[in-house]
Length: 95
Image (cartoon, rainbow, N blue to C red; front, side):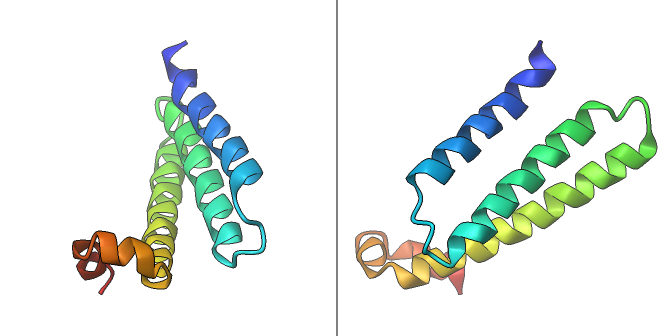
């Protein structure tokens, strides 16, 4: 039961994001792809005891998803002037 809680939470987040996000935003597709990569990584890492390949593939999927998250976070912050004026230290994380 414990193994399936995180993937279920991530499925909920993907569903909520797809319903609430602006689909016209160019970042939308990258974010959905990053969420699905994270879900794939979670599922693969649940089965690391059965195969070394699932562990390596899961780690690679997490790495790619985090690269996408960094890109998305950087683009979203630099395009959001109101957020940057409220939290100016966030700009330094994107440079």
